Length: 496
Image (cartoon, rainbow, N blue to C red; front, side):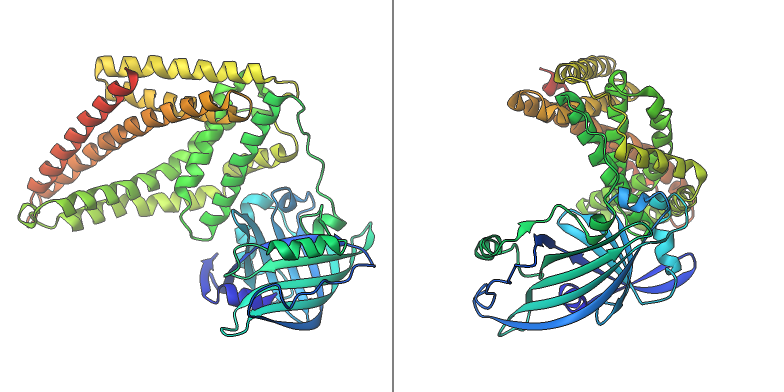
């Protein structure tokens, strides 16, 4: 639906991947699919949107879907297709997004563009992608526009579909409804008309899943097992999105690290009710990669922290090239760290992590009979451990012990989050909130520890460099010490 794509976002992005500059367009797709039969007739559309006008045409489309032989892309809800025909031609990559699907588009070529293949490395596990299904669609297309501004409100497609693989040949009819950028949701009146005309929400997420149903997922029956499997799967979603985002040159480092922390926390807190053989050493491997991301993330946090602190100081107290020193020293760490991350993401070690997560999509490492009581018991134990560590850290005024207490508080919080569907919701919400406050206070404290170390190095270097001055770095260090004491006070109050 190229015109709708142009209406949603006309900006072109330039991606440089594997040394090739490739024009790539990005759009956000918000789409509903409806199953209909041969008796279905499209209901009246011209009065769906006040002030709208209706246009109608027919297009003929051929879509070749690509995947690995093991269907690794489909397992993560990612689609790649080569579309030709009357409209919307080119290569398209569809990635799950919070409000729908993000669609990346490349010009039509015979083989997948190199930049597209590079984006798929983490979820394809380095395997070659090739055609797995072909879909021929004759589309009766209806476009509803704003009569005055000529904006596209929505596009409706009545599709006659023939699809085939090496083993199957299918034909069906369906209706797709895709919303424009100014349409927050489908008008309820139109939904009622669709249902009255015989349309029903589709059971298939895509035409590919219709002709090639995804492999069955082992879904646990017990409440505790379902909660564990659901929580793990949510973290997998974030890690996969982070993998693609990083390869696109975006910066989903924080969200990716949080997902990895949540996953590691689940493995540690609930390890006794998980399949140890399926888990293996994933905790250690995630720690390795999250650590690489952490170096980059720390530079971001410190740059923002120091610049905000400098903004608060009177100009006469900022002596020498302080901002230049901060920027240069942090970039000297960040740029090599980014190169290390890029190299790691193509390594066999990283792809082994992604292979384990791929397997968990259909075989979660959770025994099917794990009860709610077992899950709640493990979560309460994590809370007691966090309380002990916090008390010990505050008693000894020990930065290292407070950092350990922070990590324990995070595990207690994440465990409580996981339990929200199986425990007493009000009590569980209070537990999440309590440990979130502790995590926040101790997280701010740990930021001061890292920042103080960096400021000591910068101040020492500035004090011995002609034309610079270490005075301002001393002021910033004193500020961090005051913040650290305030964080410890907050943490003490949370224990009372």
